[in-house]
Length: 385
Ligand code: SDX
Image (tube, rainbow, N blue to C red; front, top):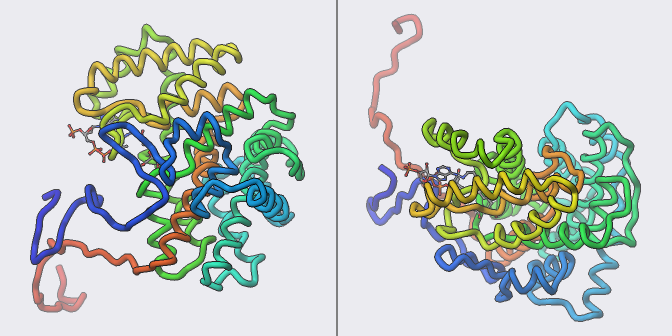
């Protein structure tokens, strides 16, 4: 029974279609294929803005003026230094843990250096939000270098958010084009309605826990293949297919086995994900530039086949289908793709947590009990069969 109404309770498995909160931060139009951050269409923002501006817009409600932007960048720089213990923890986890395991541990661990982590006042939680956002490029970059067996690079705060991540992750100065592409990818990942990881963050903050806890919940939730984990798997599937000619039989077999094709489908979008449209353009450009054109051609064929096969069911490419090949073309390893998703989404998680905290209501839904009503007689273990 997927949904029903009992004694004015609503049952909807996975809360499908249920509105759980009000927000002014972002809007996903699943029928029109639009994504809006505080009234600005993401297609306009991705052309004209940058991740730092978007982070301010989401968290503080409007695009910053020059003075506000300067102050925000100064706050980010002042908070970008990562404790040495954090780097030690990243190296302890090394290659043996998936980078999302390392990331959630490290973000949670940041709270242990913060004597005011439990002060649930809005101002203090805003301070924590900025502190975490500012440290993410160095942390995700250090995790990438560590899984490659390379040394961790220290602070280069004169670079932009996207540029500094690429420096920390690749150990070289990124060129302006790849910085713009990464910056756009991070903007596109910054916020997306009541997605599972954002919902996790809100459930956590609704208990008056703190932003460290809320973002740790969100990172843990993002890890799953049905959510942020799809970008890594989508690229691995495309590379496993190997060429456009092999896409048909490969997909037929997957669909016959009722396997979900990673990077396709969405709970809200029943049309092409507007983020995938933008990312596809960059994927085409950067895969050609980095001599990985065959990967893009295979992906394009997968898209064509999938839309022919499942388009009428509202199944189209989502944000995770093209993002991986962009990162791979830059020299980033697939295991770091989902932490890169978190690098973008961190501003959405913090913004929505701060917004919810200002008009808080503890999340506590019900479950429809379908077990035995009893009362049953207790039988001691000696008597039990
Ligand atoms: C993200 O919520 C967000 O906003 C998330 C996100 C964000 O920015 O935060 O946009 C990021 O998580 C994108 C999605 C990444 N995940 C994947 O690419 C994994 C593959 N996608 C599917 O698992 C699926 O499409 C979901 C999980 C994304 C959405 O699934 P729903 O809404 O729970 O729908 P469903 O699984 O019940 O599918 C409905 C039907 C089923 O067929 P029937 O049983 O009705 O015959 O559509 C089919 C499904 O089998 N279907 C797919 C499919 N997705 C849905 N069939 C094959 N391949 C797919 N990818």
